[in-house]
Amino acid sequence: MSLLVVGSVAYDGIETPFGEVDRILGGSATYISLASSYFAKKVHLVGVIGNDFADEDIELLKSREIDLNGLQKDNSGKTFFWKGKYHYDLNNRDTLDTQLNVFEKFDPVIPDQYKDVKYVALGNIEPTLQQKVLDQVNTPEFVVMDTMNLWIDITKDALKETLKGVDLLVINDSEARELSDEPSLLKAADKVMAMGPKNLIIKKGEHGALLFTDDEIFSAPAYPVIDIFDPTGAGDSFLGGLLGWIDYTDDLSTENLRKAVVFGSVMASFCVEKFGPERLKNLSEKEIYDRYREFRDLSRIPEVQ
Amino acid sequence: MSLLVVGSVAYDGIETPFGEVDRILGGSATYISLASSYFAKKVHLVGVIGNDFADEDIELLKSREIDLNGLQKDNSGKTFFWKGKYHYDLNNRDTLDTQLNVFEKFDPVIPDQYKDVKYVALGNIEPTLQQKVLDQVNTPEFVVMDTMNLWIDITKDALKETLKGVDLLVINDSEARELSDEPSLLKAADKVMAMGPKNLIIKKGEHGALLFTDDEIFSAPAYPVIDIFDPTGAGDSFLGGLLGWIDYTDDLSTENLRKAVVFGSVMASFCVEKFGPERLKNLSEKEIYDRYREFRDLSRIPEVQ
Image (cartoon, rainbow over all chains, first blue to last red; front, top):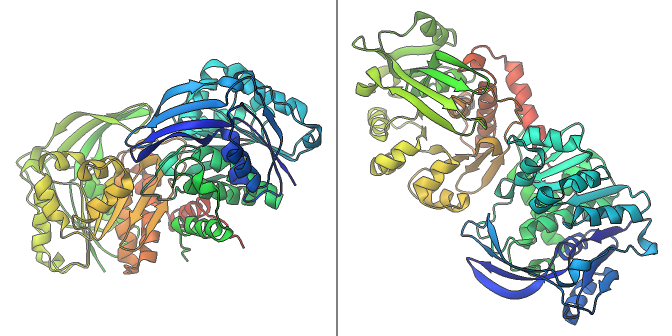
């Protein structure tokens, strides 16, 4: 199997109550690729970087055997830069600076050799660009898509159009409420699924995640991380772990989607333990499977007679 | 085994987006007793009612075989009355009217025959009254206590004193944050448990509940009730189902506490389906166990190799 990841590659400046970094590798495609690389046989990254992109970051991605043939280098400018500050409770953040740079003209071109890919991850970029990706690939088996409040606000129609070609939408609770205009999460889920996606995951931060399929609901717990260090990339790591597991197992059963949600949660729980993608550089299989088992035990309800 | 329940017995006026009732049986002791009566061998209710308390409500409690020898009748006034209105999202409510009536002078007197009771449920009343109950009983095995923001605000010292004699405190997330002065729920749990209670449950409404014991955390899902009709009494039903199950099984192992949390969640999920305690009048064993299994399936994480 192989997995196509399209999204942003960026440098982030991050302030949290626990410290700050001026510039660290970031972007949705980066986190998705790193997290999925622990599972997927081959990850193909499509994105754009500028003339300031560091060789060591190329080496990092290559060290995880991520295929960079679709990573465009645009020498006319710098890499996308974002700077944000997290509040005390880490649930909210302020954007301090956004420099789109070469990302402003990003036009995702899918190399021919990826067009028959089976699994596609559409990281959080403008819905029309996500649609452009779908227009270039040949009937992928499973498309997972992320989005954000900004696109719901300013490009809702395009977003709804793109949703029609998506097998799994992964959004957070506030995005689900905004997209559906419905305060109840369960009713919001119904409305969002009526827009097209066959499956829906609503991430609830410290409250875990809900998976909605056509015939059931699965409630996944959040890992009790006492000291979340930096939430940046948690959602993308979730998506990467999830689709990486699906690619690895090549199994789209509801039972396996449950496992995928938990592997997504596992990768997100690692991601937040250190700044940026630091913790996703060198995880062992044992660490990943051990944490999966911790999730299992955390929410295990004993049988009664 | 037998179970002592102390708390309020009331009439409630309730407005929800789905309708309203002027006057329906309510109060913490009522809901706790009704919910626990499906499990506990004998439930002893201690509370006070006024001269307006209806015979049919006495009959209702008796029909669930709740022992009313500790239910004081004070003919000098009316029964405690509360009126509230729930907002559209049902997570918040406004109190429209509170008439303490005979409840203002409530002095819980525990009849001699209940003093050796093994399990005690302290419904949400003033902490000094809860302490009075503990002062009258002889070394119960397991004391479960509820409280509310009002007591955290105005009687925090008395509350902390009472907490020292409690085996399990059951509060919601905002109460946990207020009691501990800590936004992170996990840190709040640590701080609250340092105040005395050996175990702690934090209820998170539509996000389920967390059980903290000395050696583990259990994350229970919320039942996906699309149409919550009336949330009144859900927390008390949770407590009743929980302690009722513990009484029935007479087992204080962590494993059994997990089951108790889920039976509490089961009873709360039934409670909200109709106005007031209506749904708690006539549940079948099959309905209860079926819903327990639904909870199990909802959060079941498959094993991986």
